[in-house]
Length: 111
Image (cartoon, rainbow, N blue to C red; front, side):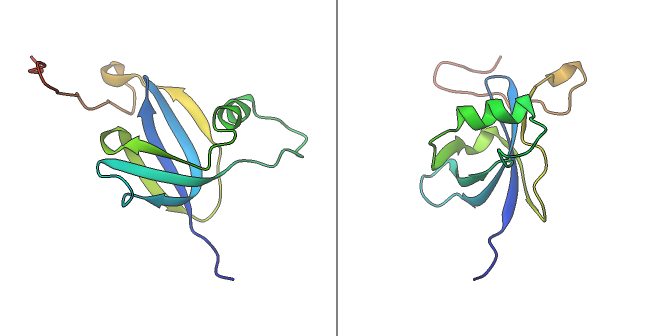
């Protein structure tokens, strides 16, 4: 059986930066969205428990796949092994690493 790829996906949602690990990442299902499925979290049998990862695991409990608007995706990396899944604050222009893109829509000229 061929080994599935592992991806680290970083995306912004409500001024939070999510770093998660998944086996399936695609953009074919819905135009303008990235489809993320088969999420990978740490083993529940570990002695050390990471509260940040537990929070993520609870948030995505029962989710088989979800869709993120493509403009909210910061980065997708194919990795060899799983790291720490986490949620962190987006700090924007105050020195943080991620600045969300401006969203323009009807009646919003961006000025």
